[in-house]
Image (cartoon, rainbow, N blue to C red; front, top):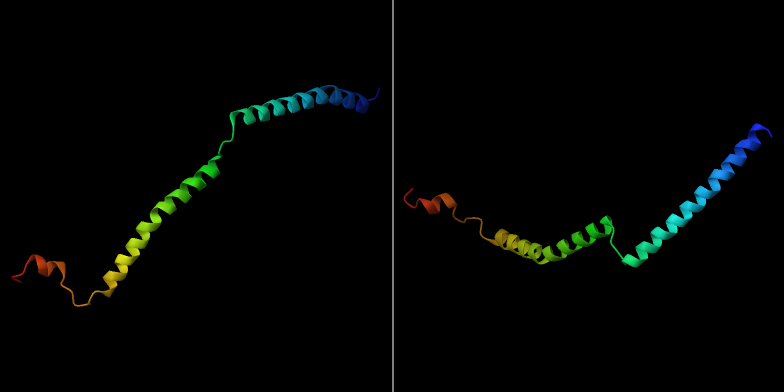
Length: 89
């Protein structure tokens, strides 16, 4: 038996059982995941939270934009806060 036949024999003798064990463990892992039910990954959870926050902020952003629009519509000659505090000046 030459060197390459020996290497091939060792690879098959150890590789095949390791591959079978890996497949069996993978099967058990997937079966356990299915028993636990559906779960969300970190990215999916972050996406859902971001979407909920944006949805909750939408009315507030619209209200702020409306107030900014009203503020721009005020006359330019409005009183400054300093003149309101000290009317004698």
